[in-house]
Image (cartoon, rainbow, N blue to C red):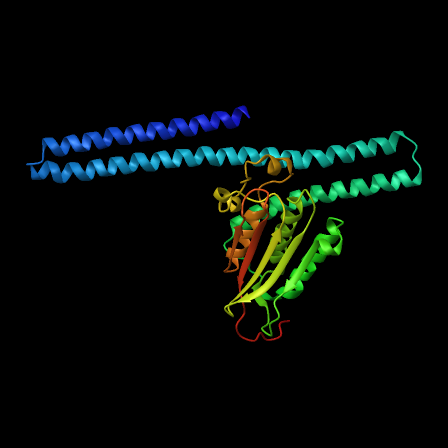
Length: 308
């Protein structure tokens, strides 16, 4: 908290300093115009000079403020990843020590094995997410491009989410628009699955009072395939709807910060969507009123030949 408050003070300081410098530059510019309004050459040279000076000060202030905020998000990411890595490792270590030094019956051992497996899966998921974020950020597009049936992919992702979180089938409902049009997109199936699993995982994770998630799959204007995931969870305040897709960004809300995460999930979703020629958007009526995250991808408009 001390670091965050210190950075907020720095943002305020840089902003005030920039405003003061711009004010001084504007005052000097006006004074220059008043003193030299009858002289063509000084006016012609002075006004552009002061305009460039004001623009430079404004851009420098914006840059400094953005750097402070980027560093704040980076530190928050490091803290979250450290926690996400340390917690399952400590848990696995504790269970192993217990198995080593205590005599346990078969039921207790099986329970410990199950918990260690869950912790190792959590650890692996965190590592894979960090690696995937670096991977998609370094390349413009995936080289793998095949026809992907979104009906099948979305259905598989829903099943995997239900199984991975131990949920009943009724907690996630899938609605597919009755259409004779094929819902095919061209892309990397693994990356598209990563994007969908992140959206579904967030919908489950940010529904602390019970999971009620709706998934809608439809074709828009014959040219787009849209997947919308709607939850009844903690919601997203309006000012943060666009920011949540930034790398490392997490909404500064107590309910959000209590939920484990790295701030990379939605960044991956939008990056993958844009690399496939689409986009990702979020909508919410506000805190405590749920949210909808949509993934829009260009549909293959011509029949696809059988690919080997």
